[in-house]
Image (cartoon, rainbow, N blue to C red; front, side):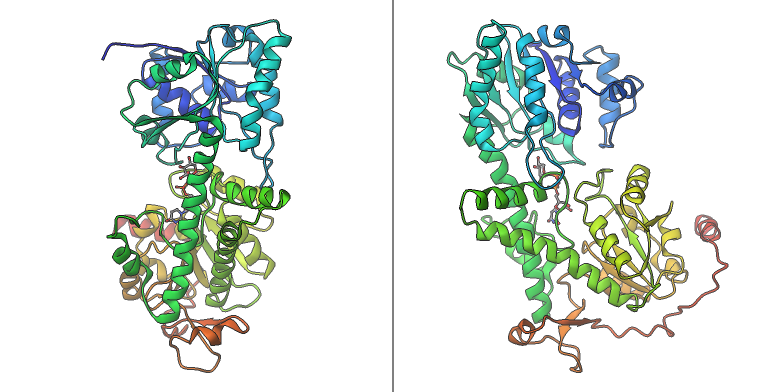
Length: 499
Ligand code: UDX
């Protein structure tokens, strides 16, 4: 395949923009990453990324030293020399809604300076009605500047945090949304850009592309809430959701992915797009009961986890609770809409002492600054010392690899509530733990007060909500609990590393 180099500028160096800029440069294009934040540009010039994404720092360093990626402010020169300009600025209002102020400002700044033979490509996720108005907006800016019309396309991204580089370089599909492209020049430019990606290219109207992106995320969120509702049914009937999902997944119409039960979905995309869709639908008088339920189930998962963890800790003021994991999922330092933040707040409101650990230092600092009263520590061991219960919120691999048997000796009570179904129930029980999770066999089972542990008929649960208690009897004393508080976490670390 012959070399096809395109001069591309990427405006907005957040998660979407920086990954795009680095990957385009890796494909051989000449890329300028543009951002208005001078502090961010200075840090990037020194090789410091504004967030963690596996492999991205190395990729950025490589393409910069090959001189295929450089960073700049939004100057007319940086814009005017590009054959294609991607816009990847933020579109969240920070409150579950859209904001289009940033993209409007950005377009007003860059569109007048774009070359007459260049193409504008919007990569940010935006509401379909704004996408539909985009060609007019751009055309007005061009006319005002006395310049020719340019093609306007959208190119939604489907990359996940934690695997963004692979998702970008080896996409499942590439969606090109046509806003204004009378001669096909924009489409052929985008095809050049993606020449090295071997994925189906779908060309559609820009409104279709916007809904393809949002629809994909809404469906993924629906799958997760479905799995969480299924987990509840499994608990009620004494079944195991992991085995049930494995059994269902053999049907190719269902498949195994995004059916992991737990504390629910977080992150910058899924929660925002569900709540925004529900909100906008109600504003235009549209009924979307399925999506409203997806949101409700997701909120309920966090509340259920808090309730279980609180009870597991002894439900008393001053109970010490260890939270393992803060980020909304592993392999990122992103705390946006992370379930951990709501969970920590709710436990602190009940007067628990909440001590959290996450492998990402930046997430620890941000969480401590965001949640009043939250203590963060530098290791899982330190979080677990003297804990009345531990709650696993993010399934970082290191938590599954902990020596739980040894750590149990440092806790006041060996109790763990697994919010991601990530630990082995057998291993945890063998280590002396009362273990509970979501929809797993032997987990907290809904029972009537005073009844022997066991599944209760659904009708009985409907009245006042289920009362939860561990199916496995937990004997605090026999569980080798109250321990000498002088055993410092550092001592344990030394013992563990010399073992
Ligand atoms: C998502 C989409 O997957 C991606 O295609 C889009 O481009 C951006 O939004 P991301 O937000 O990075 O990606 O995370 P994702 O992997 O989708 O996970 C979202 C949340 O769902 C996480 O909190 C995760 O823990 C949770 N989740 C995921 C579950 O609770 N259960 C599952 O089975 C899968």
